[in-house]
Amino acid sequence: MSRYIAVTTKMAERKAPLINKYFSKSKITKTLMATTLIFSSAAYADFNHSSWDTLLDKHVTMTNGGKASVVNYAGMQSDKTKLTNYLKATGDVTQSEFNRWNKNEQLAFLINVYNAGTVDLVLTKYPNLKSIKDIGGILGSPWKQEFIPLLGKTRSLDDIEHNLIRGSKRYNDPRIHFAVNCASIGCPALQDEAFTGKRLDTQLEQATSKFLADRSRNRQKSNTLEVSPIFKWYKEDFESNWRGTGDLQGFLGRYSAALGLNSTQTTALKNGKTKISYADYNWNLNKR
Image (cartoon, rainbow, N blue to C red):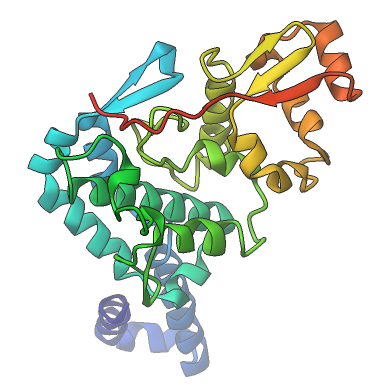
């Protein structure tokens, strides 16, 4: 920030004789302050996730028409320095900087850090694991390990998801469950691009629709709608009155087209006449 102020000040000093002919000292000061604020806003614009975006584009392959994905962890391992540098850069962001961003920029940032952290955690044991749950042993949990520098603390994946994203109640968007990735086949796809504040709503909507369109994880069977256990584990998030949907049936009804429901099935779902059951979850690593 100081470099912007210094440049602006030097330019003003060189032009001072000319400027003083037309402007009072107070006007010059106000102009400098306004210019500084403009640069300040630019400096705190959406975080640059291009390095993470490049890694995703290079090592993530979308499958099943974009409904799922697999990760080339060996490739990620070869680019480990780039991943480490990205997490260092996100870790250098201060709380005051983060607070200056709008909600979409904040949420995109947290989702990206979570996903990058998940990949980083898998690489600590790869290729000697079949599931992320192998990390931490019988008594431990991969999601409770504190290893991610973020906003002045060393955090766990659980801390990022359940405290910063969900627990803060600031974002109140159940679609985050189709964006954060747990490195498992049963999990919604790790996207092949980074999330950004400007495109976040579109990206979340696409991720949600694609996941619900996957018949291996969500399907209608007679009068029963069988869905991913994600909807059971985080049911309260889908009943948080997000965009007017106060219950799980209402949320799923918004995506009736993705679920492949006809008008009769959609009406039955919204009216609570459809039984909802939960499919098994595949914890095997989402490796290519």
